[in-house]
Length: 187
Image (cartoon, rainbow, N blue to C red; front, side, top):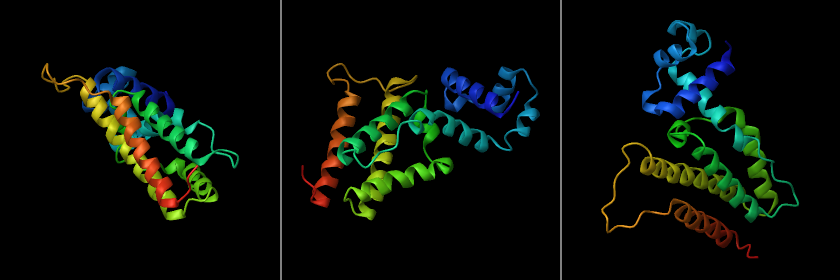
C-alpha cells in the first residue's frame, strides 16, 4: 500500500457511496488494513479529501495549456467545459472540489491568466473571469449532481426537467460575452 493506492481506493469509495459516507473506517475496511495505518499517509480526513480532490482533477490538469496561437475566447470556453466534464466524472465531484485550494495547480493557473493577458484581457479581468467561470462551474455541477444523485429533488409532473448542459452553456456564454464586452475585443 502507498499514498496513491489509498487515494485511488478512496475515489472508488466516493463513487460507490458518495461524499457523506466516505470515512477512514470504511476506507480502511476497503483496503483491508487497520484504520490507524491510514494516518501514515494522511494525518487528517481533510488531508485525504484534499488529495482526492487533486487526483479527481487530473483529467482537467492534463489538458494542454493555451498557446499564443489559440483564440482566447475559444480557449476560455473549452477550458471551462473541460473543468465541468472533470467534475462530473466523479460522484459528488463538485462537492469534493469545493473549498479546496489547487496548490499543485498554481503554475497552470498562472499560465492561463498570463495567456489571457497576452491576448489583450486586462490582468484583473482575466483573474476575475477565471474565478467567476470556476465558481459558476462548481455551482452548476453541484446543482446537477444534487438533481441526479440519490435523494435528488423530484419535480412536479407539470414542470419540465432542467437541461443542465444547456443551462451551463447559456451561463458560460453570458460570462464570456460579458468579458468580451468589458474588454472591447469584439470578433
